[in-house]
Image 1 (cartoon, rainbow, N blue to C red):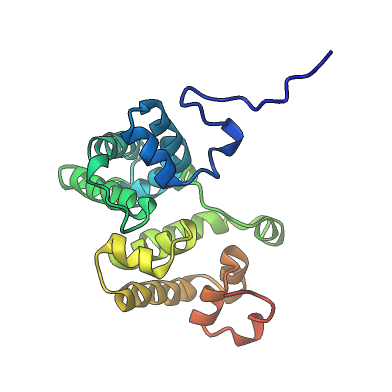
Image 2: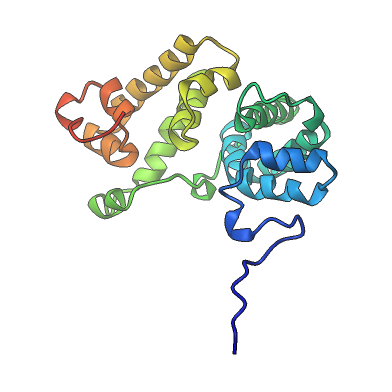
Length: 221
């Protein structure tokens, strides 16, 4: 019996396995040509990142989920305004951050249940730091950072954006974005040991920003 080797396709006609590899600009072009179903690809691609960012700002899961819905609704409605001069992800994050801040203005601050936040901790950290609630300590330390420093750190480390993209989202000069990021790392270093920070983040820019020269060998910029 001959097997069907064609990949499964969703309603937009794009192969499920190729969605993550599809260019955002290509997907946006399809939406503008009338393929509304293609927008679901962008939602699946970025909804977790938008939720993480929203949680950092509104500090409440239910409100953050509302922010995610509103963000994608606004994004769809404003898609004709996207000119492609910045990355789509940067533009999307600007919308999500503004939406979250607007939500926060009329809402009382509540304590964040950090167990609901998906912080990426490397397998090495999980094993080396067994029995230590490092994830909770890291979340608490990040949440206590000044707002601009926290935003720069989250965008750079957890969303893996360039400093140019961070600056675009934060609407500030490149050097300011970089300085906010470095100050955030320095404050985290005062709360969490050098070894644990290195194990958690495992990034050369973290290493070099904190001056851990002996640990930089073999790690790419």
